Structure formats: structure tokens, C-alpha cells
Amino acid sequence: MMIPFEYLEHTADVKFRAYGTTPDQMLSNAAAALFGAMISPGQVKVEESWQVELEAEDLEDLAYQWLSEIVFLFETESAVFSRFQVALEEIEDGKGWKLRAEIGGERMDPERHSFLAEVKAVTRHKFAIKKNERWCIQVVLDV
Image 1 (tube, rainbow, N blue to C red):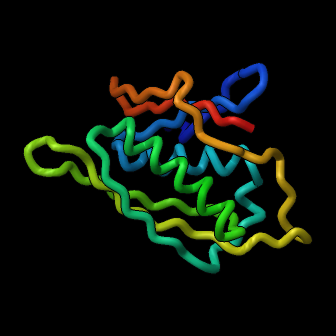
Image 2 (cartoon, rainbow, N blue to C red; image 1 turned 60 degrees about the horizontal axis):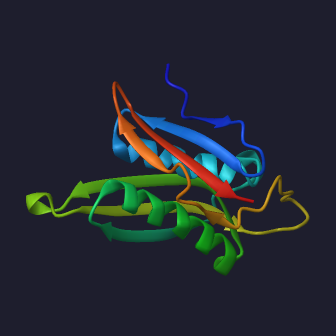
């Protein structure tokens, strides 16, 4: 059984690797790892959903945009998330990627939601995607 993600040692920030049998699953698991660094997903009910649509020339840039969009939604919508459904499609003639996602969660409630860390940004430092027997993304979060 494949683990969805793991946190790695890092001196000041949060570093993780997320995995998937498909790039869609890898990006869903990366989103769960990002938010899991902030708050326990068990504290979050799925009462609302947010739609995200993004395009980029390459998968790495799309992944960076995707994770950055989650941080943006957290900050602007005052929301916490626990469900991430991602669908990817390659643009014709290999001209890039499209991402469509639905994020499930609820508005922040200080009485119920206790934060482990506040993610300020997704960084490009050591940001990488690799495909061997499974897909893997490595991310460092600025906290």
C-alpha cells in the first residue's frame, strides 16, 4: 500500500513528498500534505466546496500554481480544507496541462480549528516532480 505523503526534516520550513499512481492523485495528496501541515484534517468538515481551474505549460508549474492557489483560498476565503479532488488533462499537441479541482472544507472557526503552523507560501526551493514506478512531488513550504 502506497503512503499518500510524508514529511521530511527541514531546518526552518516544512518539506514533504507526496505520491500517486497518477499525476492527479499525486496533486490531490500534495494538497492534503500542504493543508495537513497547517491543521489536522479531522477537524475540518466538508460543508462547502471551491472550484479551481488552472492551465500551465508544464506539470511542475501547474503543481506550483495549484498549491499556491490553496494557500490563496485559505487566506482570502477564511476557509480550511480537507478534501481535494483533482482532474488533469494534457492540452492537445503537448502544449501544456489543464487542472480542474474541487476543494471541500468549511469557513474557519477559531473555537474548533487549532493550527499547527501557518503556511505563508509555497516555495520553488527544491520543488520537483519525478515519475518512476509512481509519481512523486517534493515541496518546501515557507512557514
